[in-house]
Length: 359
Image (cartoon, rainbow, N blue to C red; front, side):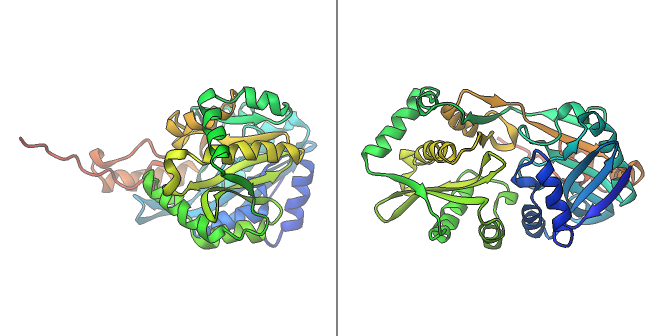
């Protein structure tokens, strides 16, 4: 078994050669790993393990371990890039569990304490190959559209109330299309920021302008900007990615002026037709915030009856370093302020102290 670390810039060709042989998605592309690492001021790598007639590539973003989001810990923490990443493989499927164990052992040698990843339900390594290696938590599911269906079938699988919204938007003159030159990127950035503020999104959802520009420039041909317009105004827009027959809804926003009309309903309806026309197999709309079945999940499920299981993986890679970080965390924080639902728990910012309510 041979293990090595691939750099997404300097080892790009070796990285891409593995992708060519593998079932993969945009989140496994070296340019995407670079963009995500840059937004976190981190380092993007690919852990590559080869042997027994197979290869595994695990794209990761590495950051120094920190205690409570502020003070230094020991070693590194790793996560899959934002979205639905996880390891991919090519070759003999039965060899994959052994290669994954090799990837974890090699990661430990690199000083990695933990790995957190969200598995891709449509590409790469699946749950059964990772069982026993760490903790696998199932979320609330994730909505997808089967693009092998006819337009009539896709429409029939649309919730009646969603169909009503789409038809109303069309009657009012709203137009959905692809912005081939990304001419409305600046306007999209504005409404995206407003949307994240409106929904009370975590700080991690506020991306820099450079991140969006990287998607446009470094993933040209893979990242697409779809828009909904009325006259000269941008009503809603979303960035979608297209790779290996899988179209992913990545990030989107709605102009608050049109919020009551839900123009993103027309955006998703157009995305189905657009993705199907281009010969793709799957349109993945995603789940709710944090993998929950919430109002966002409910909205997305209006476009399809299909839901795939969503899993996150939590792996303690180096027990010694991980335990030392836990010890430091526990010694510095009162138990009431600890957020042990986070992984790794020592990275979580302290819970706010409970407020005393007085009459």
